[in-house]
Length: 160
Figure 1: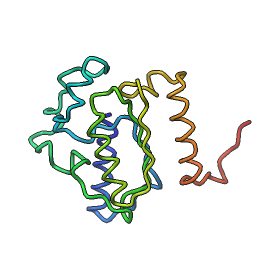
Figure 2: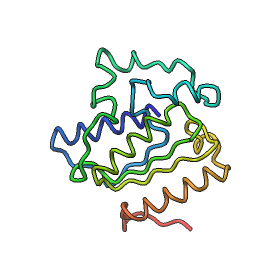
Figure 3: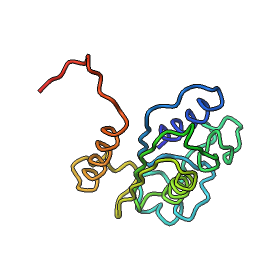
């Protein structure tokens, strides 16, 4: 959530500074829109594990919540500097609409993105319920992403 928001901010920072992008990025229920004004914020408040009044002011330190540096949903990603991205979220979580919009913006920008919305699931469900079938689907997809974009270190010790 907050870590996903920080990761997306880091990608923009790396681009601004002319630094290389990571091979890929995985986000679980990222907090990518700090405006918190989408319908899912109130519609899903009763079914999510997040508090109904998500605190963002301490994180922002005076930066406006619609600033693309802190809300990736307002960024203009481009495949030359935005890495292939995996995003998962629950259909019943408060951040749902902002995450959907973020994934759509990556798709429109031709960034390689795999978005997974799991019905009946809440915020960061794969972390909180790794045994659930929805979580297992997420982990299988994440493994595929890693196999595609991450090259194993040939010098790393293999354990069996």
